[in-house]
Length: 105
Image 1 (cartoon, one colour):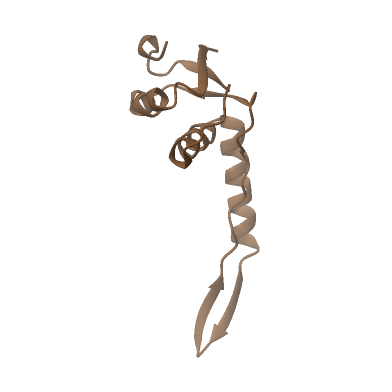
Image 2: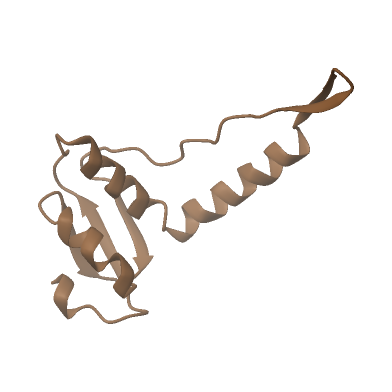
C-alpha cells in the first residue's frame, strides 16, 4: 500500500501492534506528530512555554529555566492519525509497516 501512495495524498494510519524496539517506537511517534491536530497542539504549547519562561540572573548573566516539551502523542494499540504523505517519509513508513496499517483518507 505504501508504494501506491502519491505525494500530497492524505493517509490514515492505525497502530495495530506495539513495537518491541525503542527505535521503531520513536519512528511511530515521529509519524504521529505529523497529524495536523497534534501539530497545532505542539505549536500552542510552544507559545505558552515561550511566554512563561523563567529568566533569572546568575553572576550578572541571564539564565533561562527551560521547560520540557509536552508529550501529546503516545503509543497505544488502536491509536490512529491522519497525515499528508510525503516521499521523504516513505522509508520510515516501510520500516514500521509491521506495526501500522495505512489506508487512504
